[in-house]
Length: 386
Figure 1: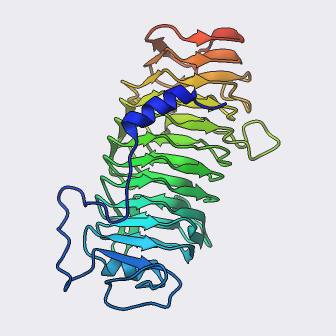
Figure 2 (figure 1 turned 30 degrees about the vertical axis):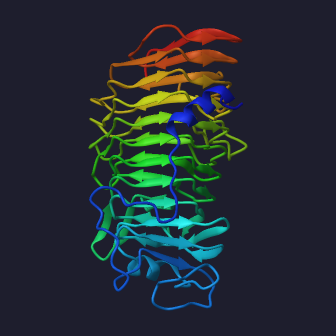
Figure 3 (figure 1 turned 120 degrees about the horizontal axis):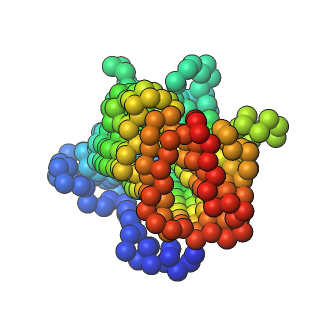
């Protein structure tokens, strides 16, 4: 299933984000330098290279590798990555735009990430980033295509106000895109298919994820889990996230046997830690279908979790929960499981075909008004505990 073309067209007309090579830097950026200083634009390609940084192109690039180009360009400038395949573990450690031209690919095989961003206000756009897969993975290690964290000599450093737009991420064992421990960052107009998780919003290094935007993305067939995940793992919180105008279908279906062996939702709000915070997030105007768990899912596993202020509205939610969830072995549009009392707005969604429209497990109260159900056997299913 796909979002209705009229909705998308109208949304695009008011919400399209466009970035061009050499675009103006955001507020707070240093101005472009005089020609005698670092160049505002450099090119990375197969060569032969020219020196000096001025008058370069894909036919005569400045660099054959991306990292030296990042370190050489002016702050607020643009690194243009020409068609070709480049090794991963790139650190955007200066405020720049990293812009790929058609055919520019980052191969992160053997790396913890393809592109890590530790400089706030940076932009990553137009790149294909694939196959992040650490050779010696350890518990909690990143395996992401593009992540708002970069690891340097002093450990992981996170960035805020990062824009990840018009990228293609695939085959990454962790998340395709990871807005991790980042605030006021954006993942928009990306394709995140065939990863462990499509797009992740989390707080893994102990900094909150607050005010992020996940819009106009396609996150289908991510084998290890959810299309979009909002997950508090450290207790500092994932809050005020806008998830809108995304398509997230057929996620979490990698394992052919054992119903819950590999399952993921269209979008999940979750925390396994006592006192976890996943609050004031808005899930609206998305399309979810064919996922291993519900189209929209809450998993609040621990006592004292704060999941207040979340809303699920105006989504198109098809046949989901095809791999079951706790206490729910039927197909289900929206699954809400909580250890502690939870009140959540679920309203004005189109749900079906499913056995259950909405299923609650634990002390959950659904508020906000009606949904439109079709080919739904039971609008609300319940179980006493989670």
